[in-house]
Length: 410
Ligand SMILES: [Zn+2]
View 1: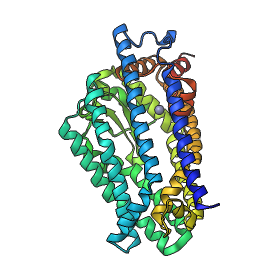
View 2: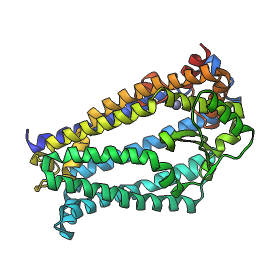
View 3: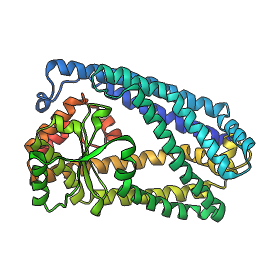
View 4: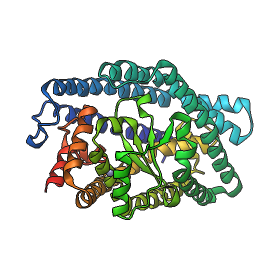
């Protein structure tokens, strides 16, 4: 294979990926006005339903504009040898491979973030604002941005530096050391994410004593789930959309409820949400996901290690001197067909798991409060109740509301 052929293969992957994505979005949009299934008719009042239609359509239009813009930008970068220019510039600053790679990715990442910031600003302060979701202020928006950058530079930068160091020390075998490190890092993050990263952006407070807390504890006790940490997070700082999640394992496990969730739902409904989360834990979904993601990281790194030395990768991007960072960019694109397939598989498994967690909640607590909480949450986030099957198959990590309600009713 010649480097020119590889270049066109990269472009072809980018184009096909883009077209498939747009086609799915389009299919989904043709279902926007479909009739709402009978068992979901009570989700929206008329007025809210019209609002949800507008919200869907506006988001569809807006995300199409963003993706066309970033697709064209990416293509231009490839065709006009953008990576070669940035590489050359980074090499003019230092001879050290780690410094070159850090400067290279720093420019690419911060550059693309700066270019997309106007879009996320518009999304937050125009679209979300218009539909009453936005609670963030302009100050908070930019402080979040800066914190995100600092985190990316410190954490992302040191991880990248370490991986390149492994590569310098051990050559092709770097993948084994990187794999071990990444596995340890993701376990560490799972344990300490809530106490190290979340506090940079949000405040978490233990749930106050009261009816809700005793109901949650009573349920946890009944099913033999050791729950000593229930936290409330101030999600209302940024958005009215509600959520709840479960994090950590062993002694570090905790359940985190958005303050917006507590405002929106009755206490029985919140217990049903907890029951669903406990279901994930009891059915070992948390451990399964962890193991699969570690195995997949290993697989990806191994494939990358087979190609990293090839001059072809760098030449395809018009860079004469092969390097880790240029190889990573080319590999990143070449690997998309595989990551699309693994992503599809993971979504499929995740949807199965959601049914299992719902079944667990149904058996151990009851279907009715879970159905009403799912409906309320859908209503309050103006969810699409009529997604297209193909779109769901490709993109949904959760079954549709209709499927979940049908399953809970059965
Ligand atoms: Zn779930």
